[in-house]
Length: 135
Image (tube, rainbow, N blue to C red; front, side, top):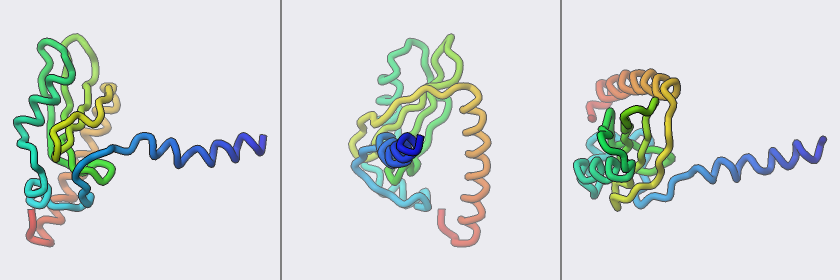
């Protein structure tokens, strides 16, 4: 039993690393909107089209999208709704190369939890902007 626990503990860092993004632009989590926009080399419209095309589903549309820092990487993140499918496809597009880095399906429950977290983040961002004077 002790060996199994040790093996699991040793494997945790490897499992966490497996989900890291391999991106072209590294950024700080607290980068301002202006800083993120200045660093991005890919236009938002191009990233949006790439994300939609990658889902390959007729009638799919972008429900939400933003330029953000995820795992230290500057990315465009899009939630794409696919007709007759619950939840959304979340697509990460590299803001430097325009290539899809990751696609994952989010259940409706996960999407709702993310929406609540986004509201909290928006309040925190507004407070930071007010204190620092930076957007």
